[in-house]
Length: 536
Image (cartoon, rainbow, N blue to C red; front, top):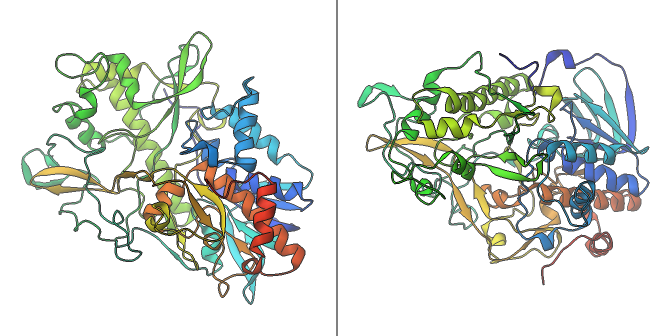
């Protein structure tokens, strides 16, 4: 059995030759939720907008399976971002925001937001070139030949492709702690999502000469706090169901390699870890019963008819859906190279679910737990019911005049020009696996709550003035690795998209560089739009 279709990041046949030229007040590269919210905010102000979306579907992670919203403190989510969740709630017949929701509900709403006479959407558009006049972007050209001219541009991709091609400074990876005076950047070895009991790292157990298992580094990790090129792991936020009327069983990928899942086999046959021990209904051997496997899944409400479940399935534990070590090249890779990595992630994660549900080497309690679930027939019909968006948790990060860091998140300093607020924990998934004392360890996981909600500087979403004066970057903004781990939540990206849109409108009206926008005027207009700039 195979899926009738599968998701793709890039297909050559998507690129269709054209001589089309478009003009707009603002061109947005990236059809993420942040991009759509920015477009809606600009259209509301009478501005014409073109969204150039590499994906065939709008919404990014918001429509791509992330239905269990990472919101932090709800009261600092304002403006159109909060309205989005209120509108989602209304679609379910509620007066309250829907912080958990089905992908199809988010998709319907995002598409409705983009359906505006002032907004033009072009799907399957991949950036080929940026035309500059001095420090201003004049136009962008897509693969296939589409050219878009605009007064102002916005990079709303998860990768930062537009600002990179425009020559704006950026970084990839983790900084040393001493770069920005931080304590939890760089290499971090912690007990969360860790192998709590020994697991052998070698292809042949007990034999170092056989080499290490795939995506395990042979050597030890660098000292804690050491910066490197590594970024936190990607996965897909898979929407699953146990509704027998909707359930599509897991498929064994054509490229399935048992060695890729040997760590899972060894782990799930090892001494149970600490999260197993406190599961409800745990047996005397500390293994959970089948229902308790739900500890690994975030359940989306409302339940489907008949009381069955839908989930937003995230990584949990030392071996799960995070494809650790497979994404380092993604931020700066070509579109074709990303497609290869995209499919590798699909194969690994689909393979993980199939393996856990079907392989006889996995204890029955886990096979039953995973086998209870499958993909829902009523979600993602275009891509075999699998999410269309890879969870690119971190890629390029712009380096501008204000770099948000642990200093901001923990209130050792606060910017004078906030345009939105962050409040989620500084959250990094694991970045690598390594060998120490003949056992495998995960490294990179950090989860530390901020002291309080904190301001996100306007200077962190615009390049330095000498770099580009008509570009805004509300997603891959200027932040350290660990601070970005707190900021990188969809409600925050949407809030920053709206703030960037309002700043762009002010700059175009004043005919000034975006760095010269009067902050007092911007703050006034943001507050009038319902944005939250202070938690006091």
